[in-house]
Length: 152
Picture (cartoon, rainbow, N blue to C red):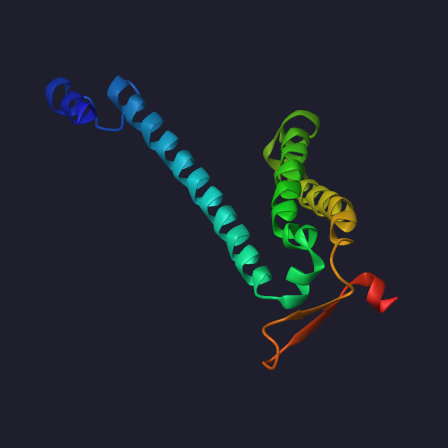
C-alpha cells in the first residue's frame, strides 16, 4: 500500500526506485518467495523420506534384515544434507559464479560433485541391505532388486 501512496501523493511512479516503499515491497516479495521455495523443498524432502520408510516397512525382507536396513531412507536423506552443504560451500567459496559466462560451468561442477559425493557416501551405507530384496507382500507381484554382492 505505501508504494501506491507514494504514487498518488508524491507523483512518483509505483515501481520507481526513488520510492522507499517500492524497495521495501520488493525486498518483502523476494524474502517471501525464497522462504516459500525453501519450505516447499523441505516438505518434499520430508515427504519423500517418509514415503520410502512406509514402502520399506512393507518388505518382509527389509524388516527381517533388521533395523539397519529400515534406516536406509534416513541415511540417504542425512547423506544428501551433508553432501549439499559441501557442494554449497564449493559453490559459494571455492568456485563461485563471477560473471554470466561462468554459470553453466559452475552448475555442471555442482552437479558432478554432488553425484560423486553421494555415490561415495552411499556405497558403504547400502552394504547393510540384504543380498536380495523382494518388494511387495508374498504371493503378489514381486520385483527382485539384487544388491552388488548378489550380482558379483
